[in-house]
Amino acid sequence: MTIEIFSSKTTLADAAAADAAEAIIAAVAERGEARIIAATGASQFDFLEALTKREGIPWEKVEMFHLDEYVGMSGAEPASFCRYLRERLINKVGIKKYHLLDGTKPTDDVIRQVTEAIREAPIDVAFVGVGENGHLAFNDPPADFEAEGAYIVVDLDDACRKQQLGEGWFRTLEDVPRQAISMTIQQIMESKQILCIAPDARKANAVRACFEGSVSTVAPASILQRHPNATVYLDAESASLLSQSVVVRCR
Image 1 (cartoon, helix red, strand yellow):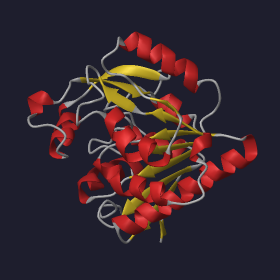
Image 2 (cartoon, one colour; image 1 turned 90 degrees about the vertical axis):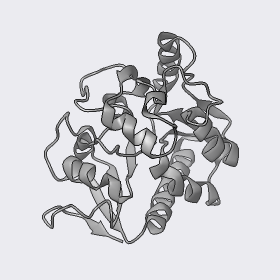
Image 3 (cartoon, rainbow, N blue to C red; image 1 turned 180 degrees about the vertical axis):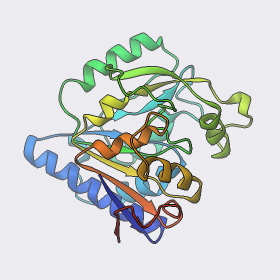
Image 4 (spheres, rainbow, N blue to C red; image 1 turned 135 degrees about the vertical axis):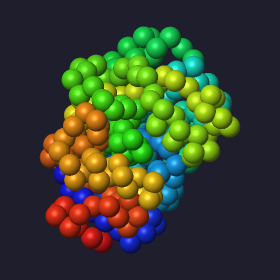
């Protein structure tokens, strides 16, 4: 795992988008297609905006998978991650092959269908974030590092639900769903390359817990320390609590 620190959210987003584009283009050049995993949430806004503006990415040859979705959530709802991905990625660049998690359908059926699809071939690059509680996808602490399925149904803890409220997706805490379909830790870790985009001061505690401490289920994103080709992109604010002993690159 490599940690990179940038002076601003904008420079972070531009650098991560450039690296993401390079990974996609390389995969298409090698195999004729690229398989990606896309993250959602407010922390991904600038990254996805920068990525969708880049020229030369063969989006028509990209197959996209979805990290997580609330159980019971319609794709038409403002808080839906399916809607988020359609508006901020799929429709902008014309991705034709994608697999979204329908929160309104029986979870067993949704998980079976998307598992069959994601296991047809390896994932070239995964875009992920870090939750304020350290979660990776919706794998809240203590996360299940051993789950072998591609997706599972998870219970959302209070810290996770409060983050969703704080980001403005819901009017009240009671409105935030209590369960979600989430890609498992093991499935994420099987990606050939992982780009973890984690800006903002509100992520500083989680960043320190996940990337300065040891790997632990109580800091789920800490598992990225064990990935041979993972890069964590931080801005000055999200990196503010890291000690000088942490090896980073500054750009």
